[in-house]
Image (cartoon, rainbow, N blue to C red):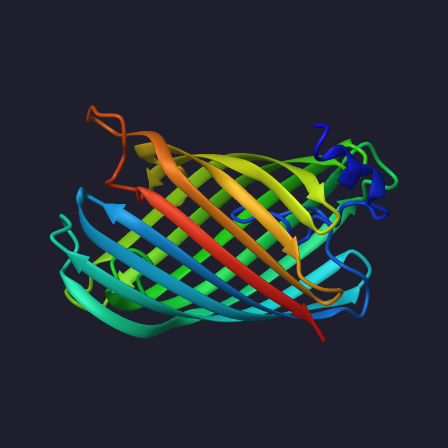
Length: 275
């Protein structure tokens, strides 16, 4: 505390939580007229106890056309390297995966309320399965309720995300179709160790179900890991986050991990610049 306290005292600006988290979102959405270019690279490693590596690289444009409303449009390319994973064909490929639309609306601002509150809906349509890499038609939505609050002004921030993710998929080979849904709760805390550097961690818990209406329970997992945010300049930023599956259990099975519905490791690197 003695080391980081000077940074807290010297920090003149309050938190802007729009981009400081890795796998979560904050409640800030930017000022009207702001435009940002962002790249986001996400890797998912380990599935089914075999060789599984999936890498997604998204390029997006973010706009704030109206007060408290943020719009993001993006496209994603994916790389899969899979060998020996049960129920997933071996493949090594690089493809354009799909496009997405992310809408966020802030209902409460931390400046005028005890906490910030934002609702978000991210819609995506893909031609490549996120996990399997198989070709087909995939559609999904992620609904998020985001809350955050400064625990110590200009020094410590905490956040909570509640999510619901329904997914539809129809694959080219065999014409098989799948429907699934995931609900989750995530918690994060960051502290300002330097005026332009934040360090902390995120903890995320998920429950996976067959069917989009939370039908048959199929597994659960808890992920934990560190997050770091760097304000590189007045216009550019970098966020790095990594998490590992600390605990999990597929339905009807024992063990301490669920490698049927979830990966063992997640990592994310986000770079953004205002223009």
